Length: 312
Image (cartoon, rainbow, N blue to C red; front, side, top):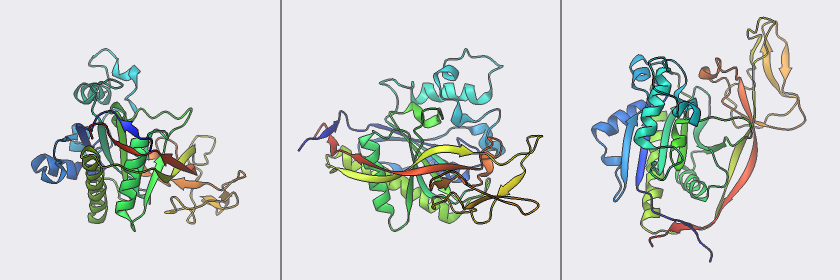
């Protein structure tokens, strides 16, 4: 049997909460783990819970000056420090110093970044690299462990849509997105689901470090195709809203003839195009400012080779 050997066992893991200060599940869990981290500790593993945007958390707002989850590119990380820099860019440089530097041998092995969405996305894992055997294996383990609760995998690999996420400074970045939950609200069911996702992820890492071999596997993923804006009038204002048939239908098939928008005078606007897509982040509250009504995805199967730790 040919192994895909990950050179070293995983040593350093961070769990980020509060990248967006009004997404409260991650904030609440990370604050709890900072007080009592017993449930996230695993033998031989350093697991560091961390509040990424404390000023936004204090104000219970998404961000102070700009979106922290979009500024971890080398341009922003390399900017000369000054008072004129947006707070989140300065904070990104601090985080990169603590957990990076990005694209270096010294960076943390894994960062789990905890998010909530107002969309009906359930438990979602966000993958940035379709060729990463280790993460495909981890996501397969989490998905299998959560069953029968569904777990969706959102692949954001795209030639022109670049994210520069907070977690991207790690060797293995993992986005965790759980909803629906309104901004500034805590729901017990959503908290329980996110907590389980972290538990199974840490169990996977522990098993890997202990020498367990994970055989080849395959996962179904939803790969981003494009983001769709709301219809707008000549002043650039929203002219139609998400159609009731699309609301809360994240990850469900959407055909060209299906309605996606509804105008105030009752006109229905269909999806159009020539293929069935799978929408996600439908009517996400935080994306109105980004001019995104929903994202179109297509379903792919990703395969991973067998993996084991090189120390065993």
